[in-house]
Image (cartoon, rainbow, N blue to C red; front, side, top):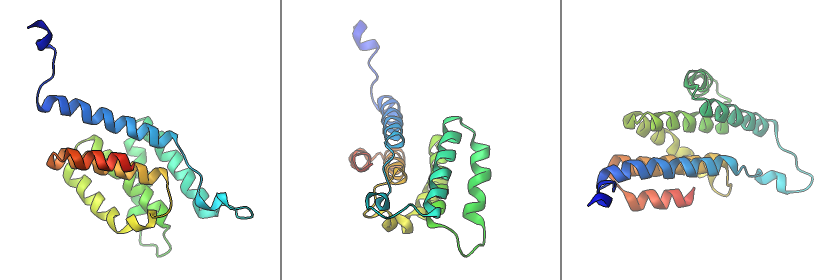
Length: 162
């Protein structure tokens, strides 16, 4: 009888397990930075846009680890809401994914859903290129699947993709 007292039953167990799985996958995806596809070919160099995006990712990662969400929003909001015609797709994706991650942490599922819908048209951009942003996106989508509709198989499939 005493052993049974400490067993977490029902939904409470999932509330503990899912965030732990998400955090582990996020840490693994962030620590496993991959080279850009262009850096594998001799004679090609990384473009200025990719270098800007990499520095933006590093900056947003550090703000995320510090839980400095106000600074994160002050950087990402202009990227998402400016009227410039020559916006960089990678910077837009980066800003949207990090904002979605914030709403995931605060469990604001409506805002998270709107960011995931915003990112959806950009998903083909990831094809053929494995990036830490893609891993982070699939982790966020997996966590959203379990929180919004209790879709455990969908969550596991998305986490395996990440």
